[in-house]
Image (cartoon, rainbow, N blue to C red; front, side, top):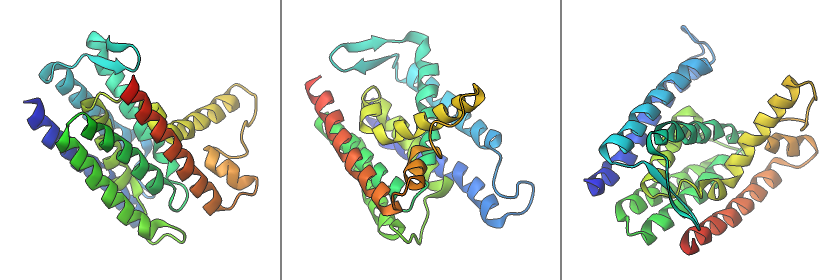
Amino acid sequence: FLSRTQTWLPFAAFIIGAAIGFVDDIFQIRSAGFFPGGLPFRYRFIPVILFGVVSAWWFYAKLGMSSVLVPFYGQFELGVFFIPFFLLVLTAIYASAIIDGLDGLSGGVLSVVFSAIGFLALMQTQVDIAAFSFVIVGGTLAFLWFNIPPARFYLGESGFTALAFALTIIAFLTNTVMVLPVIAFIQCITVATNILQVAAKKLGYGKIFKVAPVHHHFEAIGWPDYKVTMRYWIISIIFAIIGIIIMLIG
């Protein structure tokens, strides 16, 4: 049963994410109707949470998954708290959409992340997941060909939501979720800097960065777009390799 799930569940997550993002993209493109400029965040987040709740329940109730693999420790039992943990991971990955702010940035980073996850799936003989991950890598690289400066195509909500949903499902199916912060280090840092900036303002400390998320801070201090993008690619590759090593020896 788990083998069959591995075949269709990531693909279904990808399609659902694309459909949710597509609705927002349509409103943004048309800039008319009830939501000119795109759906408000609360309306975009509701279907994301619904998807998360259903998926978390499926993993917990149908697949009997209630623990996560912690490298160098083993399986860590969460029990029913697996469900809110799943929602937390999904929310964090979805929030990392803010990395899609420079031409070529998100495409390069995501292709590295899915390459690493696909390799780990292959090492675990999860061939279906590995194949799907590498198909995503191929599609992302094809997109990146036209997204490098000056971009002619954009990922948009359709693309990123689809990839975020798929990445969440694949991370749990391959039991690599605890090493994902290393493999997807750039995405984690991007979200963290945004949270820090908002928190600092709310607490009255002013700005930590000139602009958040941090890739725009680097632009503000004079780095050209292409320099930020290519350095992010390099850092992504380094941390993806580190994540793979942790999983293989842990």
